[in-house]
Image (cartoon, rainbow, N blue to C red; front, side, top):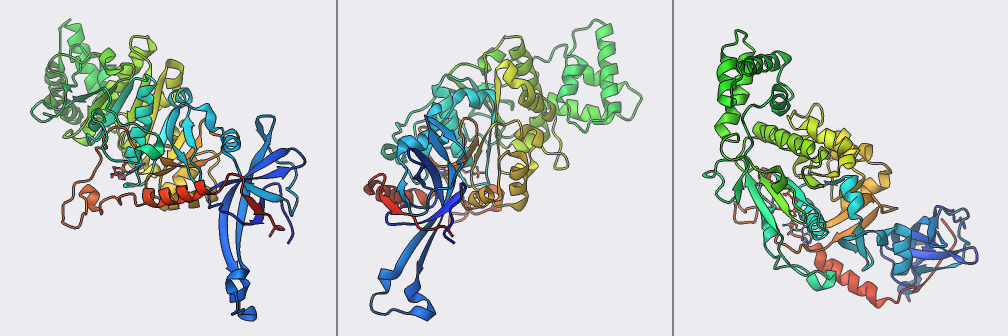
Length: 511
Ligand SMILES: Nc1ncnc2c1ncn2[C@@H]1O[C@H](COP(=O)(O)OP(=O)(O)OP(=O)(O)O)[C@@H](O)[C@H]1O
């Protein structure tokens, strides 16, 4: 009792300081100690059985806040608090400038949203995000693709070239302007972006695509084809491939996939059938026929190229991503294409964690995660199943954007893969409302909770209702809850604005 520590303190509230908001208290004579309100408790001794006061029970109500210390702002820098604040000292609502400084919010140039509990813009740093990679992890319906699109819009405005692997064709709507959202409150002007949709499927199967995605299928080396094959293709099957191509090369012929298949068929081993099956699936898709797509076209400054995988079987998607990203990474190493960022939606399908699947694309995405920054190729991975995404890749992502996650395995995976993830943060993550994200890492010094800004472009990830009560078709689950939050949040935002910054809150003795 009567204690404060350099880590936390309790205080009696006279004004408003909602959970998650920031407060300040003098540390010593001149510097401010900044703390975040973690818990708010309301109590009234008049209602305890031993002391019922029927005359004026309201007078005995107390609102207590528990604040966790972030640090001490000293000379424009945040330092660790060495001493506890003095019991009895007044606690104030922290002002915007101090919060910006303490949390490192002012360093960035990508506007993500408003800090929870304060109408303060939270910005991430474009260079750090691209060079040191980023992950967006959340359960379905939490606003994952919406938030991803907000990040992508900001990157496009900074002139970053984007290549988006889009399994469900959700991102094509970035071309169009958004028509609904709290634009004024978030200081956002709707607009569309320069986006080209490519499809690996035939033009009949993908009429919505702007262009087909095609590769040069002539004289592919055994290594190039091998890199496209799923991880579970055996060494004997790969051996058949190397033999077939060796013969075709020795004949000096100009060969394509058809010739490789025909040559592999001549092999006497049974292993050939598994290989031929994969090669035929690729040939049937027509991905190697027609004019090859220019790699330079795919990475253009301030523009997004979307690889829309709608209608492409999952194992072929992995093979296409493997080929595309290997070619792109090689071209980037040689400086033949612009720097840029590769965005992988539904990343658990393209870089599955061991034991939860295999994909041909795993090795190249791991390579980009490990070496991409040397060559100016960033990675943004998005998934609703953190536990099923390759931990090697997640741990390479310096900036994490986490929305609501409730599955215990996924929460465990977040804790393992992300530095500084505490059990308290895990609790927070379970409770995040849709459209509210926690930012961890990057240039942000301390995890922050952000109400993600409205999209400038139209959101294309809306589930299709299949029954009258608004249930959705995705995985048979109910439609993602529409964010009831914004209205409520707006109210609380207004209430907070009424309270003058620095409103006096009286601190009482510790616990
Ligand atoms: N920041 C936000 N502001 C306003 N609305 C939002 C915001 N974030 C999400 N939403 C709303 O929540 C809905 C669900 O978001 P989103 O489609 O991004 O979910 P998801 O997590 O990607 O789900 P799924 O896995 O089903 O694609 C969207 O239709 C959108 O209307």
